[in-house]
Length: 92
Image (cartoon, rainbow, N blue to C red; front, side, top):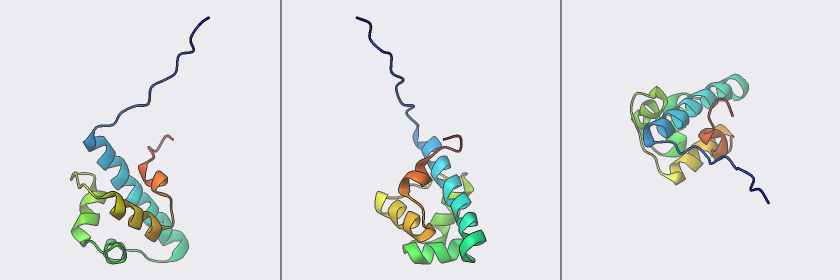
């Protein structure tokens, strides 16, 4: 009997994950703008009840801005996307 080889999932480091989340927040905020009206970083921060600098830092991909799972959930709700969408790599 032969064993099937399964591919192990890639484990991202913290920096990679922050860049993916930040890029997706920016991308989905821009898509929200195109379909639902203007959503600035300030508007998003207000809806999520965090500072504008946190959203800016997250979107810039230059700063490793950690956020809680609850904040990630609130961002996803404000942008009308799933949390999963905010965690996906561009090629997925």
